[in-house]
Amino acid sequence: MMITSEISSLIKVSVGLVLCFVVLKWLWKLLDGFWITPKRLEKCLKRQGLIGNSYKFLVGDLKENSKLRDQAKNKPLPFTHDYFSRIQPLLHKLLQTSEKSCYTWMGPVPTVLITEHELIRDVFTRMNLFKKPKLNYLVEILFSGLVRYEGEKWAKHRKIVNPAFHMEKLKFMLPAFQTSISEELEKWEGLVTKTGSTEIDVWPSLLSITADGISRAAFGSSFQDGRKIFDLITEQKEIVMSNIKYSFIPGWKYMPTKANRRLESIHKEIQDLLNGIIGRRKKAMEEGEPAKDDVLGILLESNFREAKLMKTQNVGGKKQYALSFPEMVEECKLFYNAGQETTAVLLVWTMILLGKHQDWQAQAREEVLATFGKNKPDFDGLNNRLKIVTMILYEVLRLYPPVGATSRRLYDRETKLGDLTVPPGVVLSVSILHAHLDPKVWGDDAKEFNPERFSQGIAKATKGTNAYLPFGWGPRICIGQNFALLEAKMALAMILQCFSFELSPSYIHAPTSLTALTPQHGAHLILQRI
Image 1 (tube, one colour):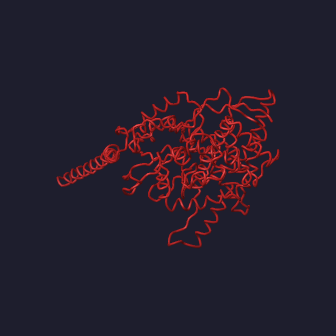
Image 2 (cartoon, rainbow, N blue to C red):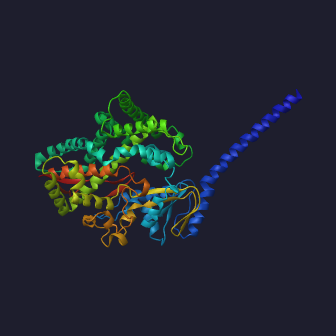
Image 3 (cartoon, rainbow, N blue to C red):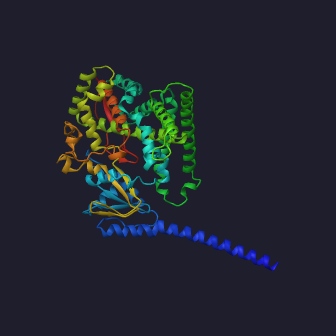
């Protein structure tokens, strides 16, 4: 009995020691991640002359940044294209005192601002070193799939998804775009017919056009289900952005808050809708039905080809694989999130700027009418004959890129980037907006609207540099840029065929940035039928 009691006591002591070790290890990991490592990185950055706030435990600069953003949103802004102080007030404040660069804290992670286009090119091209940051769990809800992957998995997904965005495939999607645009323009005509002219906030309309266009182009006859997905993603985005400030609290995502419960419910609804759409189409193709000329059909066809390839060969001894069903769902969701907003943002700023610059609007309309008359725009005309429209869109993308900055993170080893020594764990915020407004490249009128600068193409306008980055740069350049530009040209051409427009006196110039650069108070224009 004594021996049994001693063994029992020994077991209890051992279990207790193991539990203590586990708890201590967990506490040390938290201490290291939320204090020791951030303070070590802070010292490294300050030694190199970078300016930034001292690290605040757990929250970093989130509280101050949120406060400054709220203040900036409430301040009036003249009609200027120099709006960085409004969308990034903390960075703007730090840059006033920094001769080199600056850094901010996204929770416990230091983020260094990179503004020089030579360094930006270096970051984008060295993709195996400077990688996409592991996303905050809330942001990951919105952006998964291709945009998140690295290495071999990224290469495989890119190869399979890429055929859906070839120009020869995109021309088959024009009828889908035309239908969506025509339906919305009929509503505008109904409003204008009553009074001869009318004021309308075109931002919700452009969101509707691109949502329906993507739904039809992506899912063909299932576009109504696609539209439901868009509405759910919009709600999801609003919840994510309003709760992002809590996401750095350990264990927050497991708390049964109202927001977390709704996000889980939305996720299930989206998954169910996509599972149904993709499942039905996949089954039909397996039964011999030819692939349709929409994004989903092309994606499935590309995936089937890759699946056949994996059965017949190994490359370098590595197993070939196709997209799994859940991966297919994620790619469709990403297409919705990234594609719809990008095109809508491009269109809204284009209409705002053409409403302000009537001379360029007149030139664009003259070109459209000379090319198509009152007929529906065709692929060849859109792709090859709209020089002035293309110049305008390029200039809008320069002044109002859909995303003003993107980020990369160094994980593996200390690395030189220009004069900066970057320690592992640091995030680099690549400022696309700074590159687009660099007077050394664009001249003294860099902050002015001047489409003429693109009259001889992008390479000539940028003087051979890489200072034009609306869709990124390097191997990971946005796969959907042709899709976005073609849809934007189609919509703008059809609008110019039917309407003239100018800025309303009620228009308030207020660029704001959540997931993309949008007009905070909408885009109020006065439309007149021509």
